[in-house]
Amino acid sequence: MTVLTPIHKIHLNLGSQITIPNLSWLEFEKVLEELGQKRTLRLAYSRQCLEIMSPLPEHERVKILISDLVKIILRVQKKSWEALGSTTFKNQIMEVGIEPDECFYIKNYQAVIGKNRLDLTQDPPPDLAIESDLTSLTEITAYQKLSVPELWVYHQGQLTIYILEEKEYQKSSLSLNFPDVMITEAVPKLIERANSVGSSQALWEFEENLRNN
Image 1 (spheres, rainbow, N blue to C red):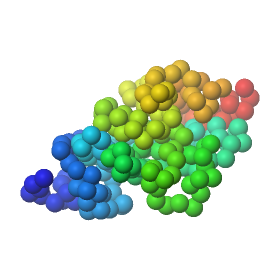
Image 2: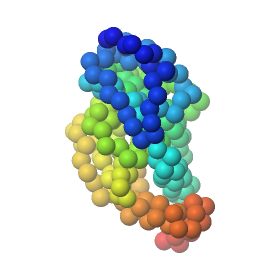
Image 3: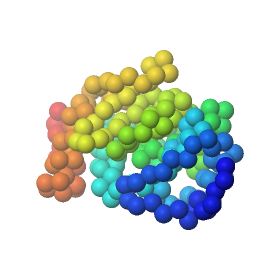
């Protein structure tokens, strides 16, 4: 690979992305090291293809709302969890890496308590990963290869749930982690309500409805 401009000096406009094909695992590791942990850019690596993305501000707002919704459900249902945000998940054997908008360990929460770095050749994948405005095949492929059992993708006002079945994602109307909550309806309603009355009010109303029902 010939790079004329150092990776850390590449500037991306908000909402844009670049693709670097034919990148080896070692080169991917070097990119991670060069960019460091404190950055706004997000990465996805699969099939020797690296995508570098710069999220829009509204992307951040949506992911926070969905993450808060998940925490409310977990709290109301009295389930333990560990939330690891946009941690870099990678598996050298599978040659794949991904950084979700948010992720949760629920069934396997005890396995990651106190861990700041994870290696999915040894650690379990998150039980739930969340993406806002994911449109990339590279990212979907990465989640499949890492065997993340449930993936939520919010895009253009709709939430799609992907459940891993026999190493392939299948769309589902129900959540694997929260089968008694209509997630595909709740998330768009929450975001629409937050745009009208504000995030705190919308989240409070969601929690009240959840407790009452």
